[in-house]
Image 1: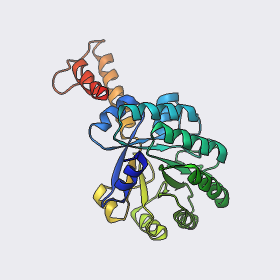
Image 2: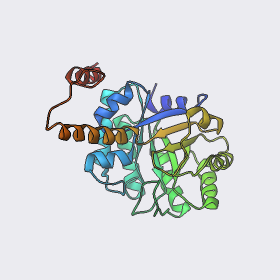
Image 3: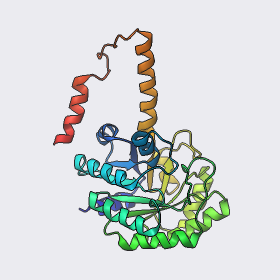
Length: 275
């Protein structure tokens, strides 16, 4: 089955489909052993690839190259890619979408932010006029083949959120995402505005949205959930802890026994990608 159709089928199945945010090939290797779906998080990729915050530094050739590597290693996993605002005008957005579909992406998320853009869970976001975003979205939809397209709004005013959710749901986009949703009641209102259109919810530690389980999201009518940064933030914590312990022990490495990771465990993980 084509990658887009496979993801579309998972999204429309009963329950809430989880997609795990990854930021490099190693984190993807760990996530792929436990989950069927991966998400290329803009937050994670900006941090990992550039060492910069998620405020618009990503260059589209880097995202395409990363997607190609992921698809080569994980041929059967769902692969949703965050493309921010499409990296510029509609012509660039369409070119990026074609390239990503050729690289094996299952789907993309296109947002309505204007530049300078921000992470969806921080202050300072500005959105394009709705007509301007809808024009870009329609052009992206017209150029895709089987690719799943998620239409995302970063509006923050509640009335504007509902207007945009309804407008996005009326397009041929496969899924609607309102980022930075504050509470479960807001999800219910968005669900009502979106009609029968599948709904995506973005969870990020320390973000604006509530921490909800998959059964809770399913009860609210959410069809797919992306977890943007669990791998990145876990790595941050674990690396900092490991280096603090190394410093405290005057440079003596801890034993790998007792559940730790050493050379054999790392090689065993990576050898799966050769199959």
